[in-house]
Image 1 (cartoon, one colour):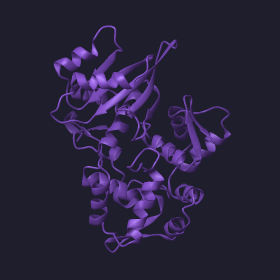
Image 2 (tube, helix red, strand yellow):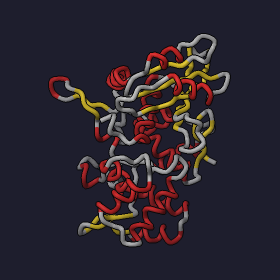
Image 3 (tube, helix red, strand yellow):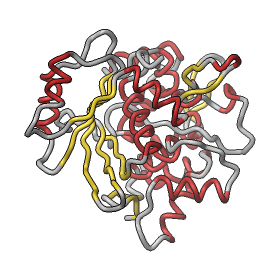
Image 4 (tube, one colour):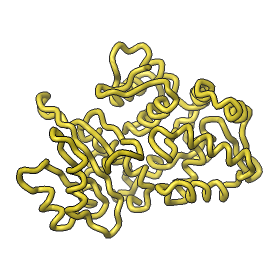
Length: 317
């Protein structure tokens, strides 16, 4: 499952794992101009040392990470930073030697075997089955609609996912998707193909289906008689392209979306994902064990221009 994941999803999985381990201010970088850095996080030791860590995430099959990739990460880092490479495969001998080279920025390595151990230990993206067999938890990665999951006990959908194209391009991708539907490319097969053809990091039909469900869960589209069409709200937004109107539609249909925004509005200081998740679990019928769904809501609020992020967390603009 890890090898078949969309690379974009894998970056979020790695970021969520780092948060569970204890890293702070974990941020998935934008898709362009990131200089090969996929995630940025802060490692605090004993409440004294705070080290900024640049992370490279590689969802590779049999190809091992070489010394050249380690050197590339060093070249992208600043002098006061340290590095971390996480891969589903392994490292070559020269890759390990380069990571351990004296008088150079230290780079920690996590190979596929260690990654699985950490996912199990911290309960990120895995679920236990009978006989203690372990498998990847599809619900963590996929964006099911309320009809498909059968687990929604609220009038609002619990699941929200980002969209491909860049961490600050969700609205742009959404607009292009709605445009496809308005032009008649509105079958499941056609929309899956559109995602696969237009976004290089979307590599599976399952992931494409998850992205197709994003505007459906938001209340912008509906699936009837084998095709997708815009709802009344979807038509209104598509014609106006108003981000404020889009916020109102999402808030009406996605659980805790407006609650997060309102909580940030009354806070006198920036809040991080852990503080927001704690607030939600204490005040709403939410049992999320990871930061994934909180992260996705925060990123959509950033894309809508409602909030911003700094080194201390998220705050209302």
